[in-house]
Image 1 (cartoon, rainbow, N blue to C red):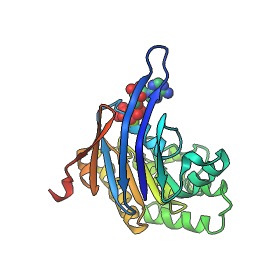
Image 2 (image 1 turned 135 degrees about the horizontal axis):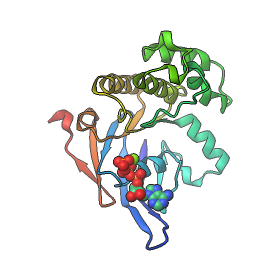
Image 3 (image 1 turned 60 degrees about the horizontal axis):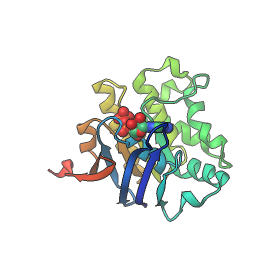
Length: 227
Ligand SMILES: Nc1ncnc2c1ncn2[C@@H]1O[C@H](COP(=O)(O)OP(=O)(O)OP(=O)(O)O)[C@@H](O)[C@H]1O
Ligand SMILES: [Mg+2]
């Protein structure tokens, strides 16, 4: 499903180039859930943004379900990202002037596949327990509720790949547990592939496989679920 081959990333700075990722290779099967941990600044978000086609590697390449995003034109890439990839960020990134349901439907406005989007958005909001909050603006929702809307939005197109960057980082323990339960439940229901960056060992432990980024490299860590 996902194949990364020797991904390197360095940022140009005024001084020496800053090497963030030196040689990242990994294979992830369809439906797998994978956690990525590592200290602040180790390159976790950088890696997720590269896989999510929001950033490009300095060298190396990768394949998502047989497609090579690095070979696509900007238009192809925008369509591909919109259709195949769902993002959940630490901050929900909801548009403040749109209601919960409008935020969930939004990605489908950018694609030609609008039919059924409102139905699917309604169904997803029901599934994330927000049936009676659909018309609330983000400011009228709690942090955990906003994050649940963001999960629904990420799944509107049944993406093959779900990328989550500290999805529960801003939540209290109880909301974090509820949001992560939901994330895994929906990931399994849609059998999409989940790549999750987290600082929480508990959350990482719920993923099928675990990795850590250290000195720009990806280290496999024990699968805590089966320990
Ligand atoms: N555009 C940029 N130019 C220069 N350096 C950058 C740029 N973007 C990120 N960096 C640096 O790259 C490194 C990796 O950043 P990244 O955001 O991937 O870290 P992270 O592992 O996600 O950290 P955190 O856990 O704090 O979110 C950091 O040291 C950061 O300062
Ligand atoms: Mg980060």
